[in-house]
Every structure is written in structure tokens, then in C-alpha cells.
Image 1: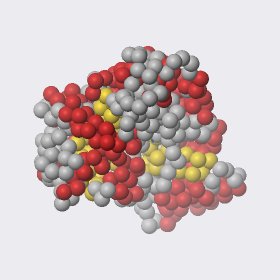
Image 2 (image 1 turned 180 degrees about the vertical axis):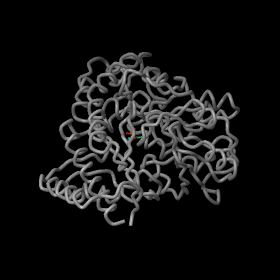
Image 3 (image 1 turned 60 degrees about the vertical axis):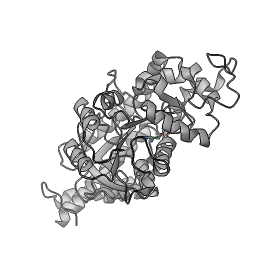
Image 4 (image 1 turned 90 degrees about the vertical axis):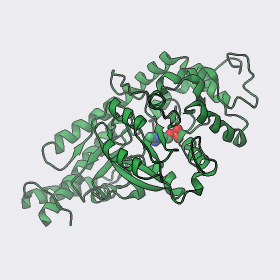
Length: 422
Ligand code: PMP
């Protein structure tokens, strides 16, 4: 039975929590806070992508209707170079999904030695990745798919616990990589401090072919007027004598159209040459027409910045509503703590140990769909059963409010039932 510390619950309080929950179920809600998808109104802001005029020709006169241009459209790479902190010449614009690129990076590394490797990863007795938790479930799913062992590393307010990362990376040559979402992380909204980035770049690793999978998915997704900057991982890796350590990924999925955006891969010149030697076997070139649409719609780095501000206007009220309702209903109760991110797509909610699954199940029965408890941990196993990821972007504001208010009812009930049982 989960243990809750705090003031013992009275019979009255338990009774009230049950009544509130029954009333919630009686409302027959059907709300979904599961995945971080843009709302239809966000997507509407990018509709300009659909009615682009003009010849399908690049700035340097290439007919984009034809094969070729494996590196992607230079003018699009230039727009995203600053945001992703990769020199445009080392930044590739690829297909529609960065997750696909991360998947490919693992497959390429398994089947063909990465620069600096003694052998292919598939020839190693075992491969281990460090997984800051809570983290992104689809990263963990890629590892699981390829039999890569995952070792959780606790997140801190400044990024992964670097004492743990340094110890594990230095101790074992089978530790080949780490997943990082360095800005507005999924799901905590954490921003890596400069010191964390420096230590990642500088640390000694037992594996000569250690790679940082730097998934900068939320590089420009600020919710406030402050455009948070993080340290330049590629430059720091080079400065500390590990130029090939970082693979940088980015995507416009949550900028333009989710699933019809453009994905980016950036790295050192040696890694880019390695990457292209594989992708040239896989494809005769990316969808340059979609890349051109992005160039014409976003225009330049300032156009990108303005578009993100417009999106933030739609998203910010939802994040504020979540914070306000959680504070009003659960503040000071000891039943929950949560993040208040300055960007990204998620809020992470911590409930008392042993309660997350029960809360998610109660919410489901009340018609409120949440990401399964445990999804933010490798193998779907949150050993403390505490973390719940809230994705408030897709539903409209009244639905977000109803879902979060309902969620607090579930948390109060699970809390009261458990306290009553102890
Ligand atoms: N990385 C992170 C951290 C994400 O949250 C997401 C989307 N939920 C992705 C990658 C997927 O991006 P894409 O659509 O480019 O595959």
C-alpha cells in the first residue's frame, strides 16, 4: 500500500473526496491530455505554408522538383542554424521527422562504426545508454527496440545529475550514449545549465565512441518573452577535444505542421560525412518542395521568432491555467508538486510515492486520458510511481481547465484513500 506522509485524513474529507469524484465521473467527460500535439488553432497559424506561390526553384537556381540535394535546402539550413546552434554548413535539413533521424543514427551506429569507434555497436557485447529521467518515452522505445540497455539518471533543476553521468560514462566502455533534451525538456521543462553542457562536453568517457543524442526539439519554443539560451554543445565538445561527441537533432514539427515539418541533423564535419555516406544509400534526396514551403513561410530567423511568439500567445494561457488550478486545488496539501516551465510542451506532475498509476487510472475512469504513468521512464517503469506528464497544448482552454480540475479531484481521492488506509 502506498505510504503518504502528512496530516491524517478525516472521515469527512474522505467522504467529500469520494463525492467529488463520483460527481466528476457523472459528468461523462471525454478529455485528452496524452500527447504533445499542436492544437488546430496553432496549426492554423501555419496555414500560409499551404498557399505558397512562386517557382519551385532554390536561391541558387536549382529546380527543386527533381531528385538530389541530400544536405537539404541551404536557405532553410541557414534559417535554423542559429536556433539549433550548428553552423549551417554542418546542419542538414532532412525528412519530416527528427525521431526518424534518431532512430537512423542508432541503426547506422549499430551497423557501421561511428568516427572514433573501434567497432560497430552491433559487435559490442552490450550497449548501454544513459537516460535522464523523467524523459521522452519515444527515445526509450528506440533503445528498447534495438536491445540497448537503459540506465536511468536522475534529472536535477539544471539537467541530468552530472556526478552520476560522469561516473557511469567513465567506468564502462559499453556506455555509448546519453539522451538529452537540453531546452524545455520533455516532460520537466528543464533547461540545462551552462555548467551541465560543459561537463557533458568535457567529461572522460571509457568509450571512445560515446555520443550525446542532443534532441533540441524545443529550441525556439519559449512561453515567455525571454528567449532562453543554452550553451553551444558542438563548440564545447570541440573545445574539450571531443569534436565528434554530439549528434544534434531538431525539428519544425511543433513550429509548422506536426508530422509535415522538416527535421534537422547537425554535428562535426566527420560525423556529417559519416552520416551522408549512409543516407546517400537510403535516399536520393529529401522533400525539397516542403523545405521550400518552410523557407517561403518563415522567411528568415526573425520570421521564425515572430511565428513562435504567435504560437506562444495560444499556448501560454493553457500552461498558466494548469498552474493556477493546481495551485488553487493542491497548493500546500503535500499531495503534489509540479513544474512551471518557461517553454516546451509539457508540465510534469509529481504525486506522492506509489500513487501515479492509481491517479491515472481514476482519471481514465472519469474520462480524462493521461499519458500512462511510468511512460517517462525506461521500460515504462517509474520505480517511485510518482510522475505524471501533462500535455496541455492540444485541447482548447476550457477543456484544459476541466481536465486539470478533474485531475485534482482524482489526486485528492487517491491521497485521501491512501491516507485513510495507513
Ligand atoms: N523529440 C522530442 C523531445 C519530442 O517531444 C518530440 C515530439 N513529441 C519529438 C522529438 C518528435 O519530433 P518529430 O516530429 O520531428 O519526429
